[in-house]
Length: 252
Figure (tube, rainbow, N blue to C red):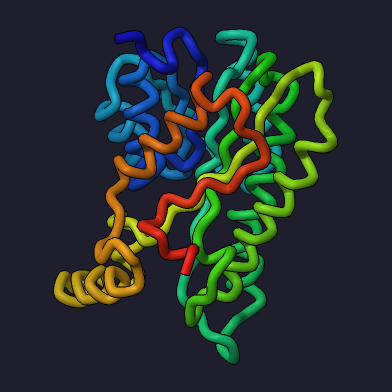
């Protein structure tokens, strides 16, 4: 059985934990040479060690354009091209209307919208013909969730970017842009929204499971396998799509 990403050069931003880390691991297992970025060196080094010899870590804050330019230059110097770009860096927090601050808004949009936009723009000249660009969306961009209005708005903005980019890029380059939209997934970033108490974290997961038609939350590997599909030639005619991997949550 052939590897789906054999000999491809891939980049996963925000790849030190959760969905990003598992996706980087699956990309490597499918034959890709994988670059992983993260803001914290200790976490980045641990992630690269867990993925194995096919991974390289580069410390990058995706909201800082100078660091993104260095990232693009490094990949170009090493390989001359990038076949798969998974823009996963980002995040958010629960803040209800009436308590939203300017700092909260700026942090969320810097990470999820500014970082996404300028990551793609920085890597655009390095993308190989037929490259796959995958942006991390969320069911929060399509459905309501108390306390998540700013986060949801940022993910809806990411969806809007893709709708326009597929019309703007040079068609001869055959680039594909798609959104991968997870539902509630058992990641450190999600459970930490409930605080440090393990019982409260499990309570959050149990509650979220009741909102999913399948009756459970997702696991990072389930999202990663969908990312492998979008990254691979199996998805060669998939462009501008929003692939929900959410147990059906966004469909009801």
